[in-house]
Length: 327
Image (cartoon, rainbow, N blue to C red):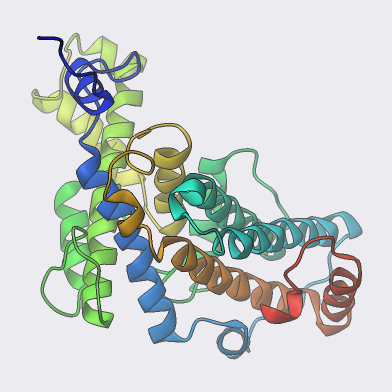
């Protein structure tokens, strides 16, 4: 009898060149992807994360005088983010959400990335060269300075497992709530957000270990794992230097959609049902993040320059979404 061809079985059991031991089971990846965004959407609503509330939150932020190039960099990143939001709003109207889910996740990430870059430029007049540097700088300049609003301000000061686990427990207001089912209220959403934070800490620990294996310090130990005390100490020292905030979670989220996990957004009879509200949640969360970023940048730029920017974008934009709907 001829064996039935199944990508699911081939990928999981035979692996790929990048994952020769087999890929992770997509039945776990898809719910976490959808339910983290659902949780963030609930938290955005709960905390009323919008332009008006952000202006209030940033009432003490002082105007800064920028060079033309620095101001233009802020404007550039905000315009890029607004364009991604407009794309998500169009994608949300697609009749079959599976058709657009992957590109929607990527658009969401780049909208978040550009908005975060605008905040960093407005805070310290710099633009970073890559995604990890941007996440690290946003963490140091925005989150540590208490310039990120909930739910985007959740942060771990270390990814050493015992420390990270203790900080995650402190963030919860009630018992644990995982990512296998959608949250329906604030406490469940916070629990789901903490679960994604915990999973991201696991992912970054794996990433740091993989990088460390290539280092001279690790090779000098003449070991191939982290079972010895010397190897663990070396690893944990790296872990302790690694903080984790929203942008680090977004990097992981983009990677799953853009580089890996071919099955989980595109394969299987139940996918379309699970994705029913997914793009709308992506849109809601990006709109809240961009509203926060815009409010912060407006305070740093001053009302005259900010209002001129918004008016010009509204007049000359080639895409659908008006800046006045966000700012």
